[in-house]
Length: 171
Image: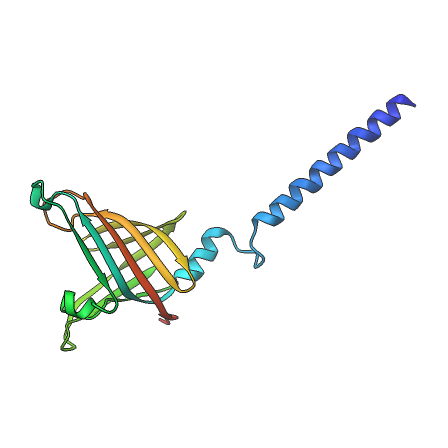
């Protein structure tokens, strides 16, 4: 009788553990059944407009001079003397960034590939490979990374870019 009781408790314990594991796995999956990366991919595909830029330049041209560049959507044209960049991110893993001057002339037309690596967006074009820490919330995407903003050969300038979703990219 004692063996049956112990065996019953062991089986009950295994059944409870199995149910807890199943429940926690279900809780970790989004309601739509997509993985985190798949969900991020769906969020990122579309057209994005630059709305803010912040760069903390640490050692301007290898000197002890540092400064901060801040631009928001209200001051973009005045401070940058160009229109905001429009970046179209396509589902097949490519992107295109276009920027016009204030007269409507295209001054930037970059194309490349993109991929997600956990919470990072990796973009690659003919000039290089860029990896950004990425956060998307309510149609606003924030990208952070270190870049060489001042052209001193060192990626020691902290960049934060904010982008607003304009719509879906079709191509």
